[in-house]
Image 1 (cartoon, rainbow, N blue to C red):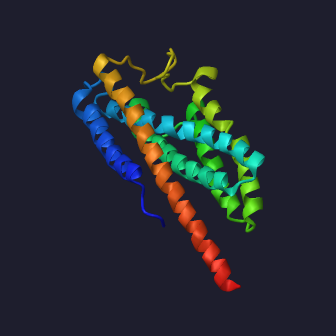
Image 2 (cartoon, rainbow, N blue to C red):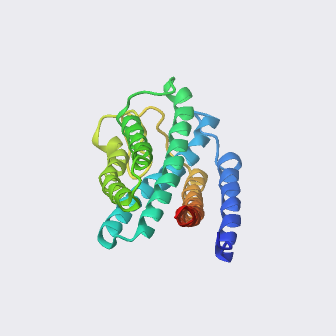
Image 3 (cartoon, one colour):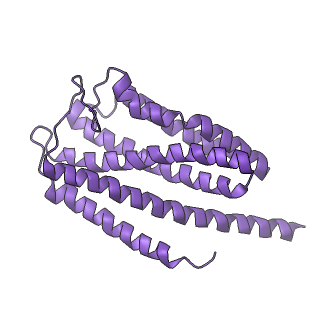
Length: 232
């Protein structure tokens, strides 16, 4: 693997510092929500990870188009990295949401439209990796992955808008309100500060992890090429 660029090294450090700062704001600066108590603090990380994961799935669909037009495997490598990082962040989103739901809804899970579409989205992209592994030819695998991710990308906006399109108990946090929501709350100034900082922090962390994963993918490709040459 080529030496890590200085910019990426700095980004690694900045990402750790931003995560610590976001945690400090969420735990020590944002006030305790009157009804839900301390469990509401999970909300800052829940929304932050959901934000980058859904953006990542949409970006993946865009990368699919670029690959299908250029046929350059570089874009497939970037797409795989984006899907992988997004799947991890979205799994964290679902777990944190479940932790919040237990005291707020008195259950770890319910088949609410938002939760259902979120689960489907996660399963779609887990299947993406499972199906790719069954294809040996790199070009066929990349073409399949591009088409699959392009269609699968529709699940991201559906998940985001589910709480606006359907009757749901899930709070509408960004740009809206929901009279049916259980666990809804209004954010104070300190809460908004922690909220938007968490969005920023997780965006930077996502970019950092994506960059590192792309470099790892490039190294894996070189190892595979060396193995193929050695086999001949």
